[in-house]
Image 1 (cartoon, rainbow, N blue to C red):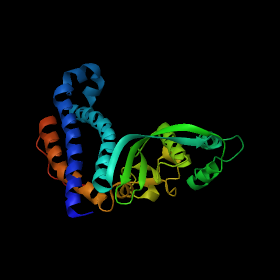
Image 2: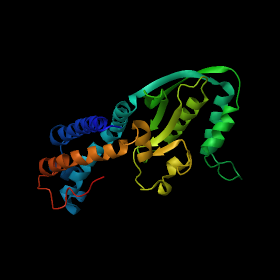
Image 3: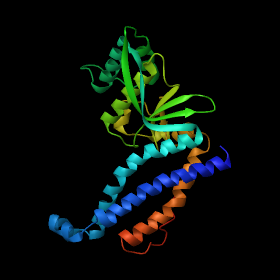
Length: 279
């Protein structure tokens, strides 16, 4: 990625984040502010024991986390468009999957979800599961899959699909994503060259330390090559240098919004060291 491309990508990433943060600030300052009198009336015991500022922070957090979950797709599309050349969200792919392959997909998912009495719990193994499924034949059945993010590398022509989830998704979300990925790889002809289950960052730090039970039920998060976490995902969807660009973009814009939150929402001056923490 050239310096010019990096600057363009960084600006695009900051535009997405700024738009989301501006909406959050408008909501907590004007549309849905924390009103201490309502808090006292609804939770008098809490208000008697805990400072209002603690619940004011929780009020902000609830109105921040949900919209940021939706922003991940937009950020991924920006990275794909700037890096690979094309990206879009909620992209539909229509194709055909042989009937026995569909049956085997259901079988594989059921084995992972339900333990058989008297037998050891089946552990996820993407390569073995896909190999078993692709041996299935039968009539062609029309199937549609809506990808969270679809991208194309304009230089090579390769096509990518990503099931992009928050780092700690629930079990049902992961199951649906796995089913979609298995169908994408089972289509004839295929509409993708590569498809992945992706997490935008790793709250556990290193990949070998990732330990969320709901994802581990469906994927071997440490070994399955269909899984991308953090830097692996950003480099795949945007090309080399994307993760570094993403980090720079967030760190540059972060100080502005921290200052606004301290002054406009919490009504205080930023304390010493408020801007030291960066990605």
